[in-house]
Structure formats: C-alpha cells, structure tokens
Amino acid sequence: MILGMSTASFTLLHVVLSLVGIAAGLVVVAAMLRSNAARGWTALFLASTVLTSVTGFFFPRDQVLPSHVVGVISLLVLLIAIVALYGYRLARSWRWIYVVGAFVALWLNIFVLIAQAFQKVAFLKALAPTQSEPPFVIAQVIVLVVLVVFGFRALRFFHPEAQPAAPHPA
Image 1 (cartoon, helix red, strand yellow):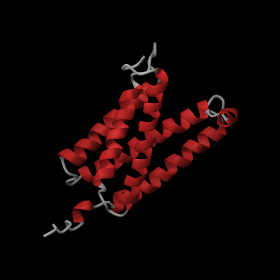
Image 2 (spheres, one colour):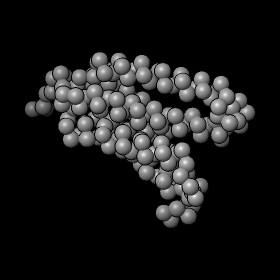
Image 3 (cartoon, rainbow, N blue to C red):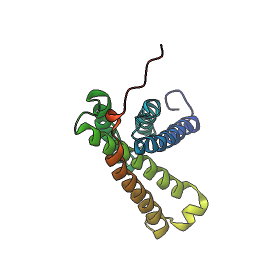
Image 4 (cartoon, rainbow, N blue to C red):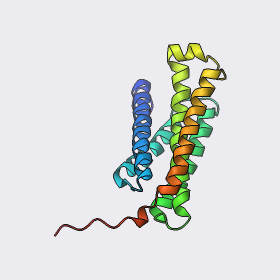
C-alpha cells in the first residue's frame, strides 16, 4: 500500500494527475499563443504536473529508473517556471524562462505518456516492443517538433504584461 492506498488506486491517481496536467498544459499553450496568461489553467497545469512528478517517486522500486530521472528534471524545470511566473511575475527575461519551462514540463509529461502507452497498450507495444523502433521514435519526434514550433510562437506572442487590465466591476 502506498500512502494508505492500494497500488491500483495510487496508479490511477498518478495517471489522472498526469492527464489533467497534459490537458491543462495544452489549454495554457493555446492561451499563450493569444498572449493570455490563463491564470486558473496555468495554476492547474503547474500543480498537477508537480504532483505527477512527486507521486511518481512513491511507486516501490529497488533502483533508480529513467522515470525517476525524468521526474527530477521535471521538478527542476517546474521550480524555475513557477519562480519565473509567481516570483518574478514574468518581468524581463523571466517571461521567456517561464515559457520555455512550461513547454519543457509539458513535453516531459507527454514524453512519459507516450512511453507508457507503448509499454502498456498491446497494439502499440507490438509496434515498438523495445521503444527503439521507428513508430516510437516517430511519435516522440512529432510531439517534440510540434511543441518546439508552438514554443517559438509562444515566445514571440506571449506578452501578458502588454494586455490592459480587466476593468473592475462598479
């Protein structure tokens, strides 16, 4: 049992957190492309992605796995993105640091999702049983290229400080 939960329940929680983080991250990306900070979605994306990485360390293992390395990298990237957003409020270079951090965190989460899908979904596992075959590599490269393209667009268009403040209701 993990934190008083069965392994199956804990795994479900971990997967749900990951999927929420990915979905919220995609909403945040779309908002960035419109120079919208999407504060609620951003908080949900960052919190669920942090929790995804943290919960990954609670699965019983005898050794350090690649997933642990990805989890540490993700948490470091998220820490920097959170400091850029909430600590420095995207001032000056902290805007691009946040954008890059958010995109890297989202990519890491999607990278793990694809890896898990190729491990656990029978027809995908048959296509790439060792995850070194072309279907796995192609899937990962497509996601990386799409996120890099959108990341560069977000770097260009995401300037929430240029947006006028919403009027206060009278």
